[in-house]
Image (cartoon, rainbow, N blue to C red):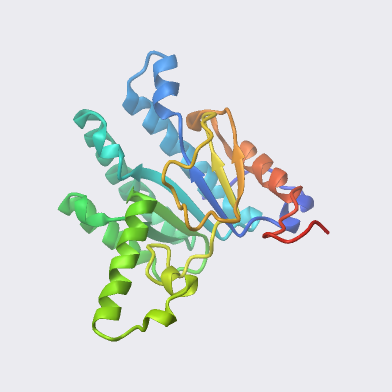
Length: 246
């Protein structure tokens, strides 16, 4: 995994530690070219490879990609099956490179609804790369933020019921420990492609103070240059976390 693009010192100076991306526009990209939806998803998978490659060179330590939402099951069965097949192909093809390049792979979301063979593949990818110390690549699969929060609340209630947690001990830090993203810092920058300006039930808790960047570019047309431009845009912003401007 390597990149030939030159990265200036100003980009390296203060990059976002964690970038999250809603990869939107594969279907529209395909339709506009008279191609199958699967062709759009395949082109989108190539862009994932580009962005994963450039992150370590920029100093980005965490990359979270919204790959399949809990609402995406409502799509046509053929498209869902194609997406799952593409997921298996991507993991099978990329795992060796990810591991060789010290990338730690992690899934956030409810894996239980996925087929047994996909669960096995994902678990194996997590196991093989769990000791890696480079880029942390988080793939959000069968993920919905409201489901995640409901899951966390239920788990805390169970602990309260058996006396392991007292009600007055519950705070935002305690809740964080029961989210799918436990141990992962909140995103500094969220990028959503395709011109849509909504969060679509993605990381609602974690994005409380995240900088948001919406681009008209469809995900298959996104690339490492556009990713670097997004990082540069992030660096121009003043993050106040609720305090007054300096």
